[in-house]
Amino acid sequence: MADSEDYVELTTPEAHAASHKSGGSDEIDVTGLTPADHASRHESGGDDKIAVTGLTGNMVWVDRGDPASNDWNVGDLIKDGTWRDLDCSGIVPAGTTTIAFKVIMSNSVSISMDFHLRKNGNSNSVNEFRLTNQLIDVDISGFGIVPCDSSRFVEYNASDSDFWTTLSVVILGWSILS
Picture 1 (spheres, helix red, strand yellow):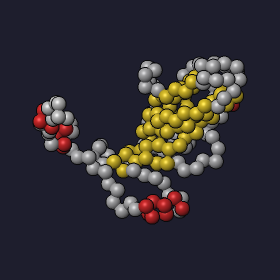
Picture 2 (cartoon, rainbow, N blue to C red):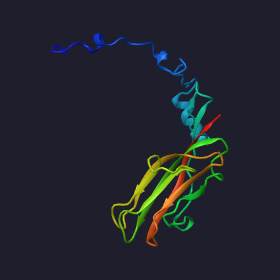
Picture 3 (cartoon, rainbow, N blue to C red):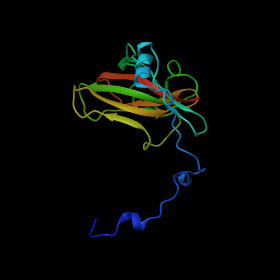
Picture 4 (cartoon, rainbow, N blue to C red):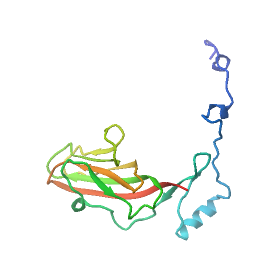
């Protein structure tokens, strides 16, 4: 940077904690987490959990593990271009704030068919997970994290068509305040 002023000389750094709204810290506790401990949890059926402290509580990510099948398939979902409730309460526990989904879809006739997920009660399309097919008879997949309401519902919308060949939805995990 011989031809320009040095960036460091142009700025006055602030203390990092002062940049927080309440002057808090960036605490992430991984005490006692060693690679061997981590591997042993999975061998005994444990979950991946990441605790984030310093918020209004601890937010914990829960990996669902290895589900044996999809949670919803093409015949389980109404495909009419209307927003519908998707009840996730049989899978995710009370206190869940967000849910991670995997969606696989295809159809036999048309391109530009959509599948959407959003927080129950939202009305704008800016903050939603949307998957749109671009080829006929080719499966596409996508992953999205969607906030849920306190009853653990989200909303979905599948394009109005009788030509869905694949529409599979599975919950991969969720975050929960503890």
